[in-house]
Length: 503
Image (cartoon, rainbow, N blue to C red; front, side, top):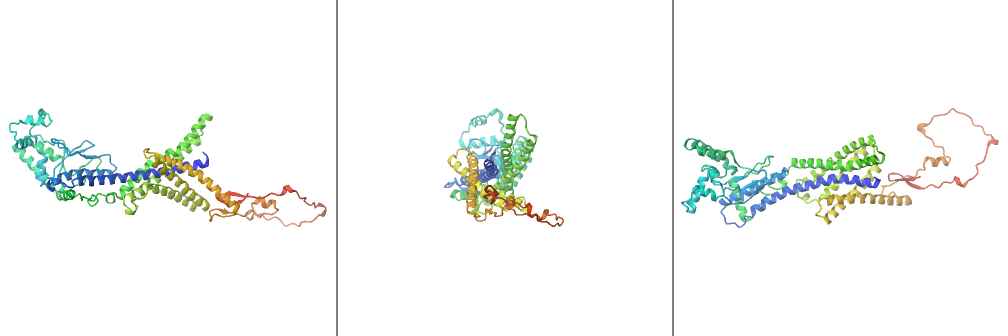
């Protein structure tokens, strides 16, 4: 690849890892923030309801349990999710999940009352319905059939919420367990057929939703649900005051986990981009010469190692910084920081740190360091600008930003070469140092000094000769004749990185 194209391509590799890290962090915080907003909006939908808070707390319990679970799942990057169906069908679950487990919720005035409601049988519900509807002649089988169930498969003692998890308030759990254990002990003597429904209820009794990966909802007491219901009726429920905001929920370990995940993916992206040109060279050589240089194949492995390592670091750094900023971990002022700024600053910072280390070791000069810093800022800025421009023009294309970044990096690399040549041309003709960025060397080269007849003394190689007396013989003297071709006009040009001298 040509130097300018290669520099632009390498700049794109550097930016791509940081860009992915920033994008992942931005989407992560947005997902957590969105789950918090959803919880608040769903509960405040009860604004204006005339329902007493003792009854409304059950509805609040549904949305708070589901909402807090989805918040925790977002924090853990979990694939699991819950939904409040608001179904009023017979024995229908209140909350369904995407892992196949359903939840029925009760929040009555006591743990015993909630446990009793959770363990109600089909026959008990049948008797309640007959009393309320006045249909005294209704048979149990007809009742079950009307509810859409197969009467031949349902026993009178079966719990209507069979198969569902039974969720109740946290403060009622201990009392509910005691109640169910007592009922099991009594029914084991008086009516063994009913033991199974109490035991099934006890086995599935819980105060929170728990997913297979450990994501869970927040528990709530009866009083908490009453307080939230009261606020909900006024539309004044604030999820942040309830402890559900990115500032409260996203901790340092969550930030570091996002950094590691982003770093691993960024390392893969950098690996592919770094190795792709080398593989192309090998394939081109194979097609042209019928052979592949073994050393080139080895170099691909080193390029992959170098590229993936740097990609991981860039992805990790950009993701952790972006997550910390947008989540409010570093204060309210940085929550609205632009992702492009984080991505660009990460690239420039990482390159500058690497060059600083090389400068300290003496591997590069101060001029090299200054040149690299200026080039990184220029090319990175062009790449980020190109990405933002194309993304704004084509927002429907997911990879528009990366494509624009690639084009911008290429344009920036070529533009920087033209910019550099313009500066050096001006400095050659004017003698300017361009604020110290260009080194003007006025020392004549050794070959020019030799042509002028100047004896150069290399003291580090000097070896003294034996003293001898020279004698002058006039007959051997021959004067030098002037020849115009002996005159060489010196010109000034670039002799090193941003260093101008005689050539």
